[in-house]
Length: 161
Image 1 (cartoon, rainbow, N blue to C red):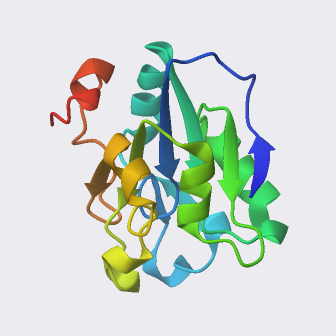
Image 2: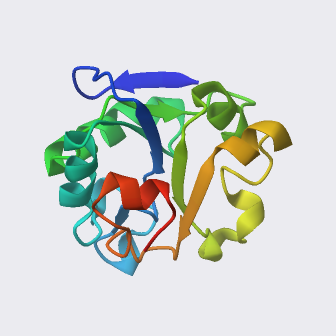
């Protein structure tokens, strides 16, 4: 797992890991689906994540990008004003579950991966059962964003919409 720092680390008591592509970023147009440099924030995701951080959450992002593209994704997040500690990406032969098991977030927010095959592609799917029980997994429809999630961290922790 490679970590790309985004900001000064914050001592949050709650760690939220957010998948980037399809969850908080989408292609500017469908012809740009595989050009991640042409991705833009979905809805009010930048503002909402900033509010969560202001309430004490530690924000970590996870990307589908490969190692050689991670700096570009980190720069894209910074360019749009996403706040957070760092961006993580898989190393060779590493799976998303491995990242989740290392980070051990309190909350994992990701999209349903509908366009690439569904739940078997999601980060949470194959996580160790014991750890999976301790993670609040929030799944949003792909490319629809996180606007439906509560701004209040306490409501988010309780799984309210």
